[in-house]
Length: 102
Image 1 (cartoon, rainbow, N blue to C red):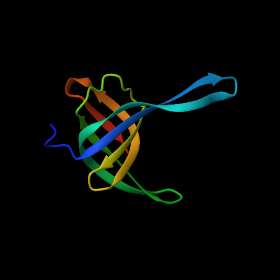
Image 2: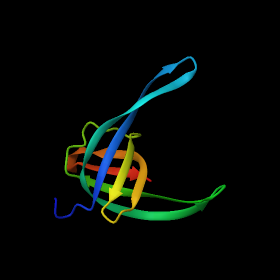
Image 3: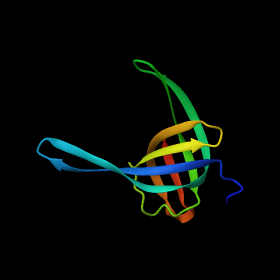
């Protein structure tokens, strides 16, 4: 797959615990860092208090994704220099792919 890789992906999980005051966050734990083929899907410009872009991406990783879960945070560094941030919407272990919500 290295011929198709166009990005480096890093996945994190926020550690912490639920207390009477709510969720108290601890340090982020890095779960996965590898090369990947990132294919961006449809994007939409939305306006709330400011203009922002939303969309998703299908990511084919060079390493196993079985330890990841929906909701884990993801940072994608494209070879073009563009940086994307989002979370995992779906884990597909059959082909080591992830559906990201950006």
